[in-house]
Image 1: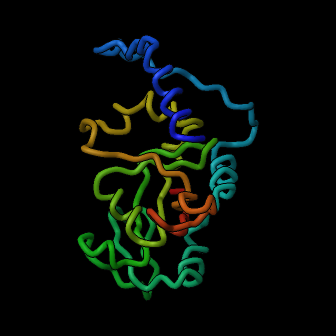
Image 2: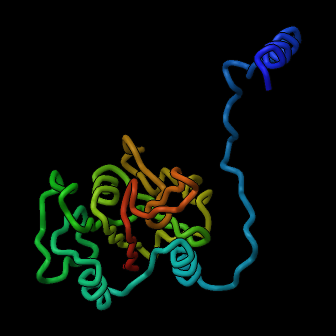
Length: 198
């Protein structure tokens, strides 16, 4: 397209009225988080969570399987924010302020969503879940829900002391396709996610 044709199209568009903007202030939020229907699935929530996490390159493991998995990932150091999953022998514990140096971060989820393989982490757990290349997350069975909306509808129960300064819903290892559309894992967070039911 040449310069004159481009400027002509621009002049034509500018002659028309500007579309109305968004009303400010926006209206109030809905009284309740709407329910999103997912396809029916008769499997137990634990099985659905494991399948969803596996589909996004994470995995569920038992405490007995964990040492071999960590060894396979070359984990020699870890930070621990909650003692829900014991640190296997031979792994050096680092203080949380050295999370960027640790091979693994051990956290506990505030909740987990079965249909998406998502875990909810907050405060110090976010740092331990994002900076090390392996995230080991304890998933309490009594905090496993079906959908992310179920988490949002139950925030007062998940955070009885009040909402934290931050919390995140994280689904599997970090991945990005920003460059050339190729998916790369571990760019903005962990390369591997291992969930352990507790």
